[in-house]
Image 1: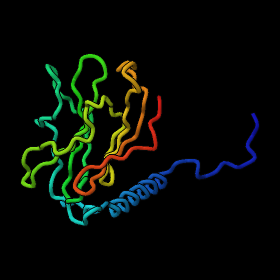
Image 2: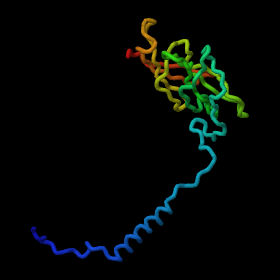
Image 3: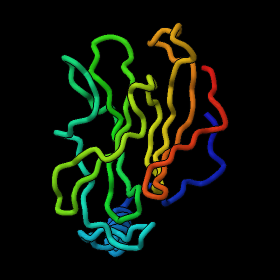
Image 4: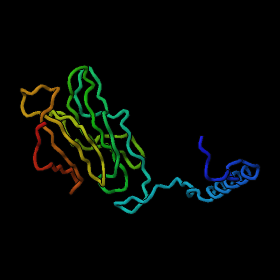
Length: 191
């Protein structure tokens, strides 16, 4: 065994002073971190970026809403939902992607905008952005900056099996001049 050329170092043996120094350092870090706490929470909502006013209303819920969807013996299912102020009035709307709870196949989706009266009344459908009769399904979906964006999966012909959409297109709806206006991407893409 080869001997070390460096003499034995005194600080490699723990002594009570080392434990005291460590405890003091940990206590100092804990005391300092207690001074760096975040600000206190408030119940007020932040100012709405589009109107500059605080939002006071809650977003409409989807429970108990009668969606304009003919499902026969099965019920309508809310697949996805998102909220945001779509018309710039400072009150949030809810956008819901809904389809029939079919036991087989890929049922088409409907996209609906929900609102409620200022007094907090029952949620109701005020606009249909995508009618299920179009036969499309929604894959990606979001509400951002007052617009609804979605990726729609569809079919190039009636010969394509309803399980396997072969056309993809992006759609965006925005509130303009008292109605929702749809814009689409430059073209549909085959999958």
